[in-house]
Length: 240
Image (cartoon, rainbow, N blue to C red; front, side):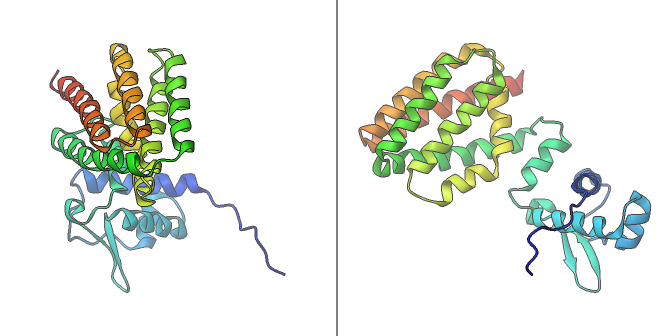
């Protein structure tokens, strides 16, 4: 008889183990090219079982922090060369939510390229359902308190994710989901200033209108202004 239920694992221990090793690598205490101690030794030092250590190392390998080499063990990577987008969340945790200036610049530049294209494609491929969903998010934003940072951050993410959904490219919503913690970190900093809220909602209305009218050029122009407004504000906050 096929068993669908699997034993419950202590995910907390695995995540804690992974975060300890991440911190050592990101801090430079463990250098690229060096080999980590054997799993048995890591388990002894961390006070966990060997399978927990192995699962933690698998997670680190998925982020590009280590490479698991058969009969050799875990070799530390230069995460700047081999890290994946999943590593961005770890960097945020390590820096306690603060973004290094170079990382902030890179994320803003990437967002510009990505979101201008999703806006353009959304104006081409949107459906009536997409138009309705965008309007519903905007209505929810209008009802939200300007000081409710968590609510506004969530709604802002929903709006941009819907634009990605409306683009017709199935990879774009997956991509924006993959760096949601980074995305919401940026917008969370942005919404600390409640005076920006009416401006953002206004841009969202204009963008939804352009998408509904299937005006590609206008959609791109509005998205460009929206992102420029956010970028200018974030740079000002970073400089301050």
